[in-house]
Image (tube, rainbow, N blue to C red; front, top):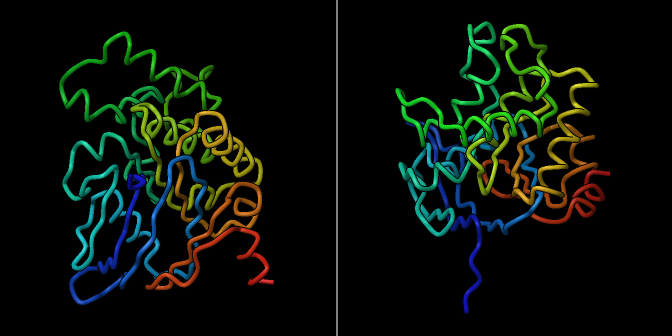
Length: 234
């Protein structure tokens, strides 16, 4: 019986008008893996996440997520959460932190429905997992940068995804906030058994969390254990 992988890319080429960002990329992701994607700026890392999430269709090759083609696939989007490097949410947006987390239930609620008691419980539970349960009722705009990032992780968690894609989750944060985010992500992969694929330049994040490194420089140039990657960088 053929093994089923969470993510499968085979010969994937993708990009934008006049620019190829990824070329002939192939790899697989198993469930419960801790994968960091590294590489130079402009090397195609964020494009890769968009392909996996189904936000961008490859021009060549095959992508499967949870056994399905992800592009414009609502079933896949419900099971794969994506936290972009630059949040589309205005940091001064006049909403409470629980309202931001509720946005993660858009696939269930749509625009007009109010959350059920069960969904409200999940919102509070997601905030508890990122250490912000006691701040329910606090305006999002009052939070520090690190706290805002934790709220956005809670938004990704609230729909109970099988996998979370993170794009530079600790960039621009102070050391204390970086450590808090690292602790949350370690808990999610170790105890919640959520598969996480994170684009990062953060060496502390790599050394203290990642087990597998995928290096993208428009093509895949490394795919292996963190120990092998670090030996090659030394």
